[in-house]
Image 1 (tube, rainbow, N blue to C red):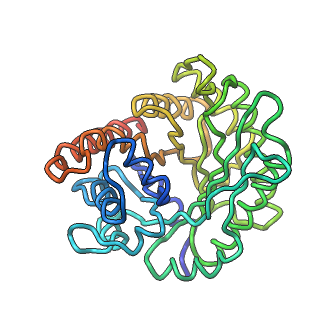
Image 2 (image 1 turned 30 degrees about the horizontal axis):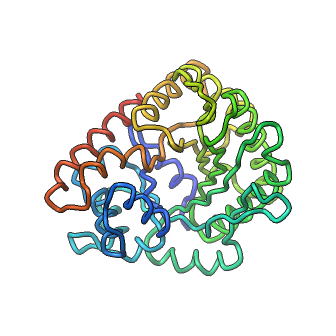
Image 3 (image 1 turned 90 degrees about the horizontal axis):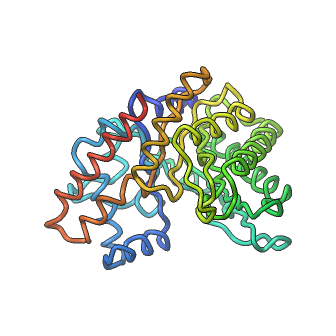
Length: 330
Protein backbone atom coordinates (compact mmCIF):
# COMPACT_ATOMS: atom_id res chain seq x y z
CA UNK A 1 0.00 0.00 0.00
CA UNK A 2 1.48 3.35 -1.02
CA UNK A 3 1.91 5.82 1.83
CA UNK A 4 0.15 8.74 0.20
CA UNK A 5 0.91 11.18 3.02
CA UNK A 6 4.65 10.43 2.82
CA UNK A 7 4.57 10.77 -0.98
CA UNK A 8 2.76 14.10 -0.76
CA UNK A 9 5.15 15.45 1.85
CA UNK A 10 8.18 14.36 -0.16
CA UNK A 11 7.23 16.97 -2.77
CA UNK A 12 8.21 19.56 -0.17
CA UNK A 13 11.83 18.52 0.29
CA UNK A 14 13.90 21.49 1.44
CA UNK A 15 14.82 23.89 -1.36
CA UNK A 16 12.91 21.91 -3.98
CA UNK A 17 9.69 22.39 -5.93
CA UNK A 18 7.82 21.24 -9.02
CA UNK A 19 8.21 21.85 -12.72
CA UNK A 20 4.80 21.97 -14.38
CA UNK A 21 5.62 20.38 -17.75
CA UNK A 22 2.03 19.37 -18.39
CA UNK A 23 1.05 21.67 -21.24
CA UNK A 24 -1.55 20.03 -23.48
CA UNK A 25 -0.81 19.56 -27.18
CA UNK A 26 -2.71 22.78 -27.92
CA UNK A 27 -0.89 24.79 -25.22
CA UNK A 28 2.54 23.37 -26.04
CA UNK A 29 2.00 24.16 -29.73
CA UNK A 30 1.04 27.76 -28.91
CA UNK A 31 3.96 28.11 -26.47
CA UNK A 32 6.51 26.93 -29.04
CA UNK A 33 4.98 29.00 -31.83
CA UNK A 34 5.23 32.14 -29.68
CA UNK A 35 9.03 31.69 -29.76
CA UNK A 36 9.07 30.99 -33.49
CA UNK A 37 9.70 27.29 -32.93
CA UNK A 38 8.29 24.68 -35.32
CA UNK A 39 5.60 22.44 -33.85
CA UNK A 40 4.66 18.78 -34.04
CA UNK A 41 5.13 15.61 -31.96
CA UNK A 42 8.93 15.43 -32.29
CA UNK A 43 9.43 19.10 -31.44
CA UNK A 44 7.18 18.68 -28.39
CA UNK A 45 9.37 15.74 -27.31
CA UNK A 46 12.50 17.87 -27.75
CA UNK A 47 10.80 20.67 -25.79
CA UNK A 48 10.23 18.21 -22.93
CA UNK A 49 13.77 16.85 -23.15
CA UNK A 50 15.25 20.35 -22.97
CA UNK A 51 13.91 20.63 -19.41
CA UNK A 52 13.57 17.02 -18.22
CA UNK A 53 16.94 15.88 -19.57
CA UNK A 54 19.01 18.73 -18.13
CA UNK A 55 21.76 17.54 -15.79
CA UNK A 56 21.47 18.78 -12.22
CA UNK A 57 17.74 19.48 -12.02
CA UNK A 58 17.46 17.04 -9.12
CA UNK A 59 19.09 19.70 -6.92
CA UNK A 60 16.00 21.87 -7.31
CA UNK A 61 13.07 19.64 -8.31
CA UNK A 62 11.15 17.20 -6.11
CA UNK A 63 8.58 16.48 -8.82
CA UNK A 64 7.52 17.12 -12.40
CA UNK A 65 3.92 17.24 -13.62
CA UNK A 66 3.80 15.59 -17.05
CA UNK A 67 1.21 15.59 -19.83
CA UNK A 68 -0.14 12.13 -20.67
CA UNK A 69 1.70 12.17 -24.02
CA UNK A 70 5.03 12.61 -22.23
CA UNK A 71 4.50 9.53 -20.04
CA UNK A 72 5.06 7.39 -23.12
CA UNK A 73 7.94 9.35 -24.64
CA UNK A 74 11.69 8.85 -24.25
CA UNK A 75 14.35 11.46 -23.74
CA UNK A 76 17.41 11.83 -25.93
CA UNK A 77 19.12 9.35 -23.56
CA UNK A 78 16.69 6.64 -24.72
CA UNK A 79 14.98 6.33 -21.32
CA UNK A 80 11.26 6.90 -20.75
CA UNK A 81 10.79 10.30 -19.15
CA UNK A 82 9.07 8.99 -15.95
CA UNK A 83 11.82 6.42 -15.34
CA UNK A 84 14.56 8.95 -16.04
CA UNK A 85 13.08 11.37 -13.50
CA UNK A 86 12.54 8.66 -10.88
CA UNK A 87 16.15 7.49 -11.26
CA UNK A 88 17.25 10.98 -10.18
CA UNK A 89 14.92 11.07 -7.19
CA UNK A 90 12.34 13.30 -8.90
CA UNK A 91 8.73 12.14 -8.54
CA UNK A 92 6.85 11.94 -11.85
CA UNK A 93 3.24 13.09 -11.85
CA UNK A 94 0.56 13.54 -14.52
CA UNK A 95 -2.18 16.03 -15.38
CA UNK A 96 -5.43 14.09 -15.59
CA UNK A 97 -8.11 16.68 -16.30
CA UNK A 98 -9.57 16.96 -19.79
CA UNK A 99 -9.36 20.73 -20.16
CA UNK A 100 -12.10 23.31 -19.79
CA UNK A 101 -15.34 24.22 -21.52
CA UNK A 102 -17.79 27.12 -20.99
CA UNK A 103 -20.54 26.68 -18.41
CA UNK A 104 -23.90 26.65 -20.20
CA UNK A 105 -25.60 28.92 -17.67
CA UNK A 106 -22.63 31.29 -17.44
CA UNK A 107 -20.68 31.15 -20.73
CA UNK A 108 -17.92 33.51 -19.54
CA UNK A 109 -16.98 30.97 -16.87
CA UNK A 110 -15.33 27.58 -17.32
CA UNK A 111 -15.82 24.06 -15.99
CA UNK A 112 -13.22 21.30 -16.16
CA UNK A 113 -13.95 18.00 -17.93
CA UNK A 114 -12.51 14.52 -17.51
CA UNK A 115 -14.34 12.68 -14.72
CA UNK A 116 -16.26 10.11 -16.75
CA UNK A 117 -13.39 7.75 -17.56
CA UNK A 118 -11.00 8.93 -14.84
CA UNK A 119 -10.75 5.65 -12.82
CA UNK A 120 -9.84 3.73 -15.98
CA UNK A 121 -7.26 6.31 -17.03
CA UNK A 122 -5.74 6.39 -13.54
CA UNK A 123 -5.26 2.61 -13.62
CA UNK A 124 -3.47 2.94 -16.96
CA UNK A 125 -1.37 5.93 -15.93
CA UNK A 126 -0.26 4.19 -12.74
CA UNK A 127 1.44 1.49 -14.83
CA UNK A 128 3.49 4.23 -16.49
CA UNK A 129 5.15 5.47 -13.32
CA UNK A 130 3.40 8.59 -11.92
CA UNK A 131 3.00 8.88 -8.16
CA UNK A 132 0.80 11.97 -8.14
CA UNK A 133 -1.74 13.74 -10.35
CA UNK A 134 -3.10 17.20 -11.02
CA UNK A 135 -6.52 18.62 -11.92
CA UNK A 136 -6.93 22.31 -12.78
CA UNK A 137 -10.09 24.34 -12.38
CA UNK A 138 -10.30 27.91 -13.67
CA UNK A 139 -11.94 30.76 -11.75
CA UNK A 140 -12.36 34.07 -13.58
CA UNK A 141 -12.82 37.45 -11.88
CA UNK A 142 -14.92 40.17 -13.52
CA UNK A 143 -15.83 42.97 -11.11
CA UNK A 144 -18.47 41.81 -8.65
CA UNK A 145 -20.24 39.67 -11.28
CA UNK A 146 -17.75 36.81 -11.61
CA UNK A 147 -17.05 34.35 -10.29
CA UNK A 148 -20.56 33.11 -9.57
CA UNK A 149 -21.11 30.92 -6.53
CA UNK A 150 -22.41 28.22 -8.90
CA UNK A 151 -19.17 28.13 -10.90
CA UNK A 152 -17.05 27.92 -7.76
CA UNK A 153 -19.20 25.15 -6.30
CA UNK A 154 -19.42 23.07 -9.48
CA UNK A 155 -15.66 23.23 -9.98
CA UNK A 156 -15.17 22.34 -6.30
CA UNK A 157 -17.41 19.27 -6.70
CA UNK A 158 -15.38 18.07 -9.67
CA UNK A 159 -12.10 18.67 -7.84
CA UNK A 160 -13.43 16.63 -4.93
CA UNK A 161 -14.61 13.75 -7.14
CA UNK A 162 -11.22 13.77 -8.87
CA UNK A 163 -9.32 13.79 -5.56
CA UNK A 164 -11.36 10.88 -4.18
CA UNK A 165 -10.82 8.80 -7.33
CA UNK A 166 -7.10 9.54 -7.25
CA UNK A 167 -6.66 8.56 -3.61
CA UNK A 168 -8.68 5.39 -4.25
CA UNK A 169 -6.24 4.57 -7.06
CA UNK A 170 -3.30 4.95 -4.67
CA UNK A 171 -2.00 8.26 -6.02
CA UNK A 172 -1.60 11.74 -4.53
CA UNK A 173 -3.97 14.45 -5.83
CA UNK A 174 -2.88 18.02 -6.47
CA UNK A 175 -6.00 20.20 -6.55
CA UNK A 176 -5.56 23.40 -8.55
CA UNK A 177 -8.43 25.89 -8.41
CA UNK A 178 -6.63 28.68 -10.30
CA UNK A 179 -7.97 32.20 -9.81
CA UNK A 180 -6.87 33.85 -13.04
CA UNK A 181 -4.63 36.93 -13.20
CA UNK A 182 -6.52 38.28 -16.24
CA UNK A 183 -8.80 41.20 -15.46
CA UNK A 184 -9.03 44.67 -13.97
CA UNK A 185 -9.58 43.56 -10.38
CA UNK A 186 -7.68 44.74 -7.32
CA UNK A 187 -5.34 42.60 -5.27
CA UNK A 188 -7.87 42.64 -2.44
CA UNK A 189 -10.58 41.36 -4.78
CA UNK A 190 -8.23 38.54 -5.81
CA UNK A 191 -7.58 37.76 -2.15
CA UNK A 192 -11.31 37.59 -1.42
CA UNK A 193 -12.00 35.30 -4.40
CA UNK A 194 -9.09 33.00 -3.54
CA UNK A 195 -10.40 32.78 0.02
CA UNK A 196 -13.96 32.03 -1.09
CA UNK A 197 -12.83 29.51 -3.69
CA UNK A 198 -10.50 27.60 -1.38
CA UNK A 199 -13.00 27.63 1.45
CA UNK A 200 -15.57 26.06 -0.85
CA UNK A 201 -13.11 23.52 -2.26
CA UNK A 202 -12.04 22.25 1.16
CA UNK A 203 -15.62 22.14 2.41
CA UNK A 204 -16.61 19.97 -0.57
CA UNK A 205 -13.48 17.80 -0.21
CA UNK A 206 -14.69 17.09 3.32
CA UNK A 207 -18.14 16.14 2.05
CA UNK A 208 -16.48 13.62 -0.30
CA UNK A 209 -14.38 12.13 2.54
CA UNK A 210 -11.12 13.09 0.84
CA UNK A 211 -8.10 12.63 3.14
CA UNK A 212 -6.71 16.15 3.39
CA UNK A 213 -3.36 14.94 4.77
CA UNK A 214 -2.38 13.59 1.35
CA UNK A 215 -3.82 16.48 -0.68
CA UNK A 216 -1.49 19.10 -2.18
CA UNK A 217 -3.04 22.49 -3.00
CA UNK A 218 -1.84 24.40 -6.05
CA UNK A 219 -2.95 28.00 -5.91
CA UNK A 220 -2.48 31.39 -7.48
CA UNK A 221 -1.00 34.27 -5.51
CA UNK A 222 -3.21 37.25 -4.66
CA UNK A 223 -2.29 39.80 -7.33
CA UNK A 224 -3.88 42.84 -8.93
CA UNK A 225 -5.42 41.93 -12.29
CA UNK A 226 -3.21 42.09 -15.37
CA UNK A 227 -5.35 44.89 -16.84
CA UNK A 228 -5.70 46.88 -13.60
CA UNK A 229 -2.66 49.08 -14.23
CA UNK A 230 -1.55 48.32 -10.66
CA UNK A 231 1.81 46.79 -9.77
CA UNK A 232 1.95 45.07 -6.39
CA UNK A 233 5.07 44.93 -4.24
CA UNK A 234 6.22 41.43 -3.22
CA UNK A 235 5.36 42.31 0.39
CA UNK A 236 1.80 43.25 -0.57
CA UNK A 237 1.41 40.01 -2.53
CA UNK A 238 2.74 38.00 0.39
CA UNK A 239 0.46 39.63 2.95
CA UNK A 240 -2.72 39.23 0.85
CA UNK A 241 -1.86 35.68 -0.22
CA UNK A 242 -1.12 34.43 3.28
CA UNK A 243 -4.25 36.13 4.63
CA UNK A 244 -6.38 34.22 2.10
CA UNK A 245 -4.66 30.89 2.79
CA UNK A 246 -4.80 31.17 6.58
CA UNK A 247 -8.53 31.91 6.36
CA UNK A 248 -9.41 29.00 4.09
CA UNK A 249 -6.87 26.12 4.03
CA UNK A 250 -6.96 23.41 6.74
CA UNK A 251 -3.69 22.89 8.59
CA UNK A 252 -3.81 19.13 7.83
CA UNK A 253 -3.12 19.68 4.10
CA UNK A 254 0.20 18.14 3.01
CA UNK A 255 1.43 21.42 1.57
CA UNK A 256 0.81 24.31 -0.81
CA UNK A 257 2.49 24.93 -4.17
CA UNK A 258 2.19 28.23 -6.03
CA UNK A 259 1.60 28.65 -9.74
CA UNK A 260 3.26 31.51 -11.60
CA UNK A 261 0.13 32.25 -13.68
CA UNK A 262 1.32 34.93 -16.09
CA UNK A 263 4.00 36.50 -13.89
CA UNK A 264 7.46 37.13 -15.33
CA UNK A 265 10.23 34.82 -14.04
CA UNK A 266 11.56 37.64 -11.86
CA UNK A 267 8.12 38.52 -10.41
CA UNK A 268 7.37 34.87 -9.65
CA UNK A 269 10.73 34.50 -7.90
CA UNK A 270 10.50 37.71 -5.87
CA UNK A 271 6.89 37.10 -4.84
CA UNK A 272 7.71 33.54 -3.75
CA UNK A 273 10.59 34.84 -1.62
CA UNK A 274 8.28 37.37 0.07
CA UNK A 275 5.59 34.74 0.65
CA UNK A 276 8.17 32.36 2.18
CA UNK A 277 9.37 35.12 4.52
CA UNK A 278 5.82 36.13 5.49
CA UNK A 279 4.83 32.51 6.11
CA UNK A 280 7.61 32.19 8.67
CA UNK A 281 6.54 35.44 10.36
CA UNK A 282 2.95 34.26 10.78
CA UNK A 283 3.95 30.65 11.55
CA UNK A 284 1.97 29.21 8.62
CA UNK A 285 1.13 25.55 9.34
CA UNK A 286 1.97 24.04 5.92
CA UNK A 287 5.14 23.67 3.86
CA UNK A 288 5.21 25.90 0.78
CA UNK A 289 6.98 25.61 -2.57
CA UNK A 290 6.62 26.39 -6.27
CA UNK A 291 4.96 24.60 -9.19
CA UNK A 292 5.96 26.79 -12.12
CA UNK A 293 5.82 26.33 -15.88
CA UNK A 294 6.51 29.50 -17.87
CA UNK A 295 8.41 31.18 -15.03
CA UNK A 296 10.99 28.38 -15.26
CA UNK A 297 10.89 27.89 -19.04
CA UNK A 298 10.63 31.38 -20.52
CA UNK A 299 14.29 32.41 -20.49
CA UNK A 300 15.43 29.01 -21.77
CA UNK A 301 12.89 28.91 -24.62
CA UNK A 302 13.95 32.37 -25.80
CA UNK A 303 17.54 31.08 -26.12
CA UNK A 304 16.73 27.61 -27.48
CA UNK A 305 14.64 28.61 -30.51
CA UNK A 306 14.22 24.89 -31.29
CA UNK A 307 17.88 24.48 -32.33
CA UNK A 308 20.13 21.73 -31.01
CA UNK A 309 23.19 23.97 -30.89
CA UNK A 310 21.38 26.26 -28.45
CA UNK A 311 20.53 23.53 -25.93
CA UNK A 312 23.56 24.13 -23.62
CA UNK A 313 22.87 27.87 -23.31
CA UNK A 314 19.14 27.29 -22.82
CA UNK A 315 19.72 24.69 -20.12
CA UNK A 316 22.19 26.98 -18.37
CA UNK A 317 19.51 29.71 -18.21
CA UNK A 318 16.95 27.18 -16.95
CA UNK A 319 19.27 25.93 -14.18
CA UNK A 320 20.10 29.51 -13.20
CA UNK A 321 16.40 30.30 -12.81
CA UNK A 322 15.82 27.08 -10.87
CA UNK A 323 18.62 28.08 -8.49
CA UNK A 324 17.03 31.53 -7.94
CA UNK A 325 13.57 30.07 -7.34
CA UNK A 326 15.03 27.47 -4.97
CA UNK A 327 16.85 30.22 -3.05
CA UNK A 328 13.51 32.04 -2.68
CA UNK A 329 12.35 29.17 -0.44
CA UNK A 330 15.00 29.79 2.21
